Length: 406
Figure 1 (cartoon, rainbow, N blue to C red):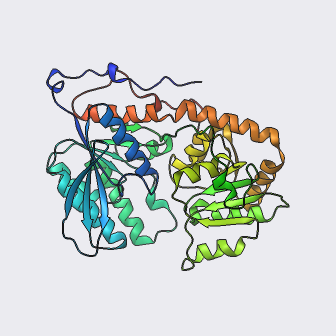
Figure 2: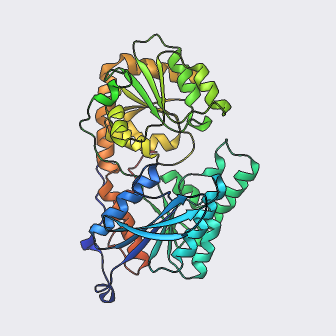
Figure 3: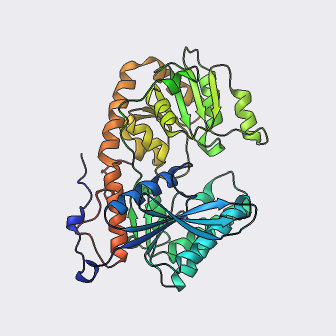
């Protein structure tokens, strides 16, 4: 059943005092825009451009890693958006924390709603609350459950999840299961469920595909961080156990210094293509569009951007069987639980043309009905207006997942 669309701006009751004021929002928690890294950066760019076009003053914090800080904060304008560059001279996790803290210090001096993407540095949000700033936090996934982290890191993430939940005025969950989890921290009245969006991909050039020695429709693809909780090694092992005339493409950074990455390389045979990470979004779209099926092994998290983008490209999905993936992919996916069942699902994808077609059609339908950027961005705008004293006439459509979808 098609869900009603998100409330339009015409449905918002704007106080008379605000009609002459320009609403303002600051976006924290990403490395910055224009997007060149991941899902949060892509979302931040989409939202910033959307809000500027609708009359908002928008600032997006951008991380500049330097050898020596000579200008901590500088601002430039890009497509009507204030890009607030913060210089940090640290490296690794320390650089991220330094960046988050400096962003908070600067945001506390500026007007507007603060939209924070992720909670890994949520301890700093207490300063924003003390400075009486309004805060919306997208709580992302349940980071402390990821097996790659040691006890100290898990404890840090767990504590920051609690702090983020209580320091923020509003919480955004990108998946109903994440919303259920957050409801153990805050009342449901403080939580909105807003998923991720994707643009439909209805055509793409073949050149990026052929440049990797691939043939359109003759390969499967995985686009993910090469980590145990994304099941990359079982996917590679399952594929290599098949008799096949297709290839498997695994996009993601590989390092010879990481044992799991070494294991993936060792498990791969000549039919597995390991091109590393590709940041050219046009090339990634083409590789996704021309794939016979998309492999999605994620086990921890909510609505994964790469999975949503696969649906928008009309990909059949072979996904790890868990509530996150079942809700997102719906009828577009067939599921696996281990290497053996993954091998069987790969065999189905390579041999059953009717199944591939049916799943591809279901993918486009699911993307069109539940993951339209217009609905997602309007829902975030409604949340920002709510903190400015404006309430939507009805909740965003994406707050009401289809019955039985999980």
